[in-house]
Length: 294
Image (cartoon, rainbow, N blue to C red; front, side, top):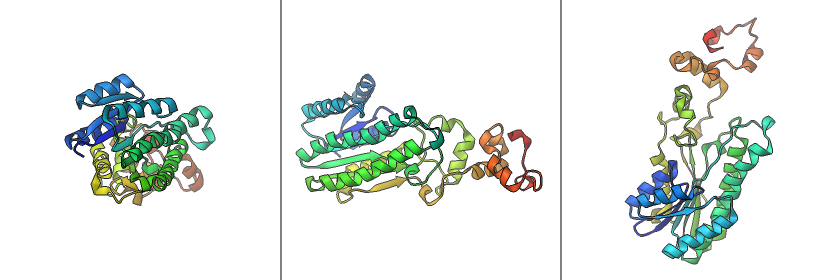
C-alpha cells in the first residue's frame, strides 16, 4: 500500500479509523471523509492526510469530494465506505421515517460512493472499492428489515459494479462483519447478557475487533487480492454457519447465566412459547423458569 491513496468514508471512528491506522502504517496516503467535515479533517491530520466533508446521501457533496481528492493527489487507488445507519424496527412497525434514512445511507449512498470513486479509479488505471455489508444480510433477524435489507441489496450492487468496472481494472468487493463494538453498536456492548449470547453462537468463541475488519480491508485494497472481484468476505468468526440468537436462545442463556440475565426481558421464555406449550398444563419447569425475569 506504500504511496497508494486510500479514501475512507467514516474514517473518524470504528472500522474506518482502524483502517486508517493500518493503512497508514503500510505507507498509504490517507483521506478521511465523513459528514462531519471538521472531525474528518481533525482525524486526517493524525495521519498527515486530507479531510473531506462528504455525506454519501448527497450527490453534490460526492462530486465535490471526488474533485478535492483528485486535486490533492491526482488519483484514487482504494476507497472504502463505512457510512452506516441503524434503526431496529419490525416490518409491522416500519414507517418512512424509519426506513428512508437507512435506505438512503446504506443503499443509495453506497451507489453514489461507487459512482464517484470507481469513475476516478477507472480514469487513473484501476483500483479497489470496498463496501461494508453485515452478517445480518445473510442471517435473518427480526427488526433488521431496513438495515439488513439495504446491506443485502448493496452486496448485489457490488457484483453489478464489479462487472461494469472490471475492464477498467477496478475491483469492487464487500466485507460483512458480525457484531463488533463501534459507536453504532455501543449500546449492545453495554449489555453483557447480549454479548455473551452472541459470543456463544460464534464458532470462534470470541467477539470480533475492528482490526479484524481493517485487516480484511487491507487485503482487499492491496495487490495481493487483484483477482478477487464481486465478492463478499464475511468477517464473523464463522457465525454465518449458525443462526443468529433467537428468543429461545436468550431464554436458555438466562437460565445458565442468571448473574448476567437478571432484569433483562430477553432472558424470559417468550410469550409465544408459553402460549404454545401451555403455561398451566405443562408449566415451564423444563426451563426452570424464574420469576425474577418477569
